[in-house]
Length: 197
Image (cartoon, rainbow, N blue to C red):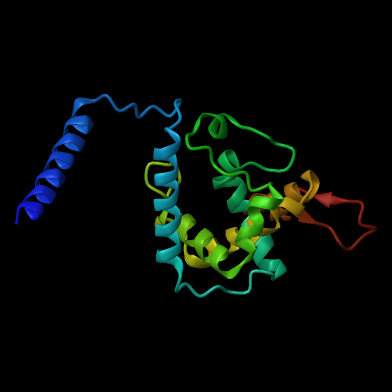
């Protein structure tokens, strides 16, 4: 009985101690100072295990399809490149000022993990649901699953792209760019050199 009371007392003291430290304001939450290695490892492990557990039953579509890769490019440029970078860009104001640092998806070694089924599931889940207190938004609030999978497909191909390929795949064509109409009628009956306005 004394042993059980001793355990309960120890747990109670630990909880009170943690509460006092948290409410005292001595913990620095500034993004310009790194966590201690112990805290960083704890948070990293918690995040990785949480995402792996939450994403394990997600069905992965065929991410090798060219149209899926190309359709994810414009969304990546608009929503991700500021933090996760692009070819020939090693840092941005966003990526330099966030803590923890967002991973660079131009890094071949890092992106290799997303080429497995589990890695694709985890990338999809993180894009859709975001990650608390990391700066990673939950894009599922505004984007359907197909668009999110297209971003995952694009990310998997990003390390292999040069700057020109990246620009081609991330240019969003809107109606004004595709509009080939004129403000008048073309006279097609003659030699083609006259245009009526």
